[in-house]
Image (cartoon, rainbow, N blue to C red; front, side):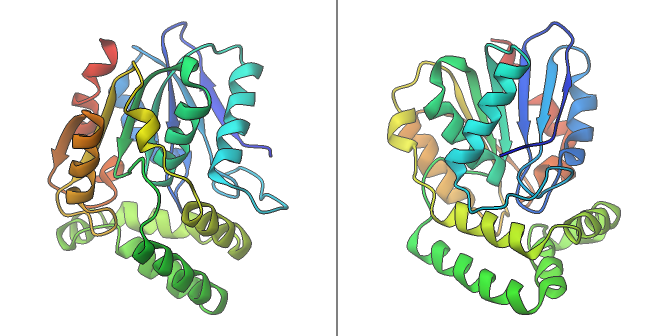
Length: 251
């Protein structure tokens, strides 16, 4: 599996930044600006997203994690702070389990460490059926659901850009990604025992991954938790607040 990435090496601790489903590395631009020159930044794009080539075969979340490790080896990066949004958080969690010694911290935005619940798996299956028939309608509806009503009014530019970029993702890549998310294993039990800090950031009005579900994981993991008043796309709608809550990485 080949993944496109950019690495801004400032000879500082490295933050590995993983975007979500239907997104791209460009969505981190606000966060990158907020981090300034305090950290080196490794931005990786998921299979078939952004400029990453489409995977010719089905893949798992673990497969993506292993491909990311190859990038670290190629760039001689020994340790990273992992920062993942949504699907990127699933990948980051899998990476943290597979390559624990390389992880300095794990931060999940609008994401969880556990597997899909039964109801969520059914929604993935319905999405697969829908995307096969109505790709444009599915993408538009799926992206609209990531934002609250107020966010849809106040972030029209970001939403339009996301829809345009997502429209370039092939049906095959979307379906493979949905299946990878549906079939992933949870790593919550493993992460209970790790020494590095875990930080979960939730949107109080997230219609995709409820804040209640994230709070339950926070309790199980004894993790740090930050709640922001927003939906599922905090990395686009709450850039300043997210940047301010990255201070723990320095510890």
